[in-house]
Image 1 (cartoon, rainbow over the protein chains, first blue to last red):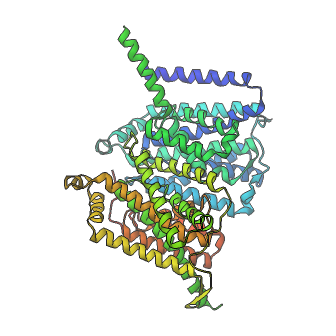
Image 2 (cartoon, each protein chain N blue to C red; image 1 turned 90 degrees about the horizontal axis):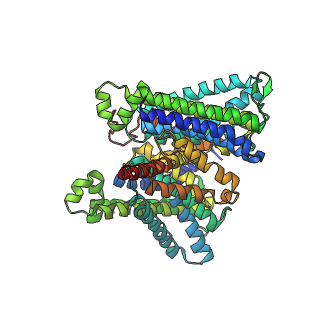
Image 3 (cartoon, chains in turn blue, green; image 1 turned 180 degrees about the vertical axis):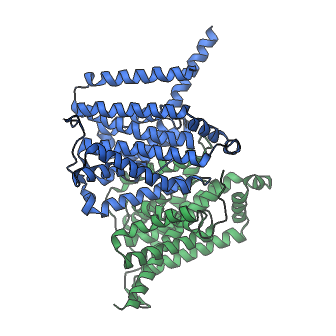
Length: 321
Length: 294
């Protein structure tokens, strides 16, 4: 295993340890709630990061995949009495299929067609959720969604859900890491550096891109299902186009294409508007302003900043030796 | 109302909103041609145009003849600022980064407009007193006619500018090949900045003429901008004639679709069209092939 590989395991172990200790230090249930939302965001944004890091494309429709996961889970369990786990699986399958349908025609094109298509898709999903109020509850939202259960034990409390959400988020990071090391990951990295060269050596570039896009949509869907079963209620604004922009903001602030970028971005941006209520009013200025400054001056995001600080320290240490 | 009158009504209202989409789509094309960036702040240019008209006409009491050019100038200035302070200064030249700079700017603009003008809908007075007119069986307001006339005038001015002035031809040269244009002594930076100014001005114009019908608010332009974007894709992204054809087509489809089906799903039509175009014919109605596969 190379040095970078070992570093990843240490970082993951450190994060797992922090996750294990955090509930001991957080007494306030509301803060635990914020950490739970953070875990879901880490999951979605890690998926988004796979897409931008490996396929070089970005999606402005991930809030819609998140929302589809949440609504399909909610409707199947509450209206049709399905088991929540089964509903979650069904939602992920539907979302994967939808992503496949969007990805196949748009990802074979050069340029930013995926952004355009996912943007349009997100707008359509929001309008449908609002208009199909018979099934979705319309603007007032859909409520009465049952919690997930493990061997008869309901995971409704903030504490129980915390373990589930963070375990899923860490598994998501692990899976992303393995993908990066796989044949697909190497092929996509080659694609990112030189599409022509990658195609010339026989990397099925379009197919790989579609696979990564579908996987990243599944990440969002799973997070959405978890959200629905945790809160018990879902409402359309959580999944609109502005939510997609927020998710992309987290991805870019954290560091696009960096495995830890999703974690950094979600960990930094999730708590601010939730903990500091002033931000609710100034959310647009705040999110827009931060994203604008970062994109202009630090396009590698927080993860890039971290690497730069470490690089500078390593360089100083090297000089000293 | 007879079927004919109803049809005529739908067509007139479709052309009215279609004009707005066309102006927005032209703004998208201008910036795309100069920089290859999709400018997601175009909708906020529309919002600001309407909000400026509200302030200049209502609060400051200026005559429309003065308020309209002033509103256009302010938003054109915002377009230039977006280019000079954000896009130009960005360390990365990666297109995704540049596109998301406009997404970020859009959120920032929206937040600032909300602080200045509040969240409520603001009534903007029409350009001339509201007396209903009958035309081919449709009932119109003078504002409908203003919208059509001003859009036509703006298109005529643009056609003249791009075909018969040195600066306009220089902007086109930069769009075709920036390097060659620079070698011919064209100041490409100035042309890029000019494109942002024009896009801002067109957005402001759209906002200024539609808000007497829709009312102005901090986010009124967002949906119109997104539909203008769909119109630009439909026409062939970056193609000027395509933007106009795409805008009017989309306006008509929306209005006839809402009439034939249900007005609840009116807003879906534009985006379904957007997806269909991207799936079936990504270069749009009039675009030239640019569908590189690798």
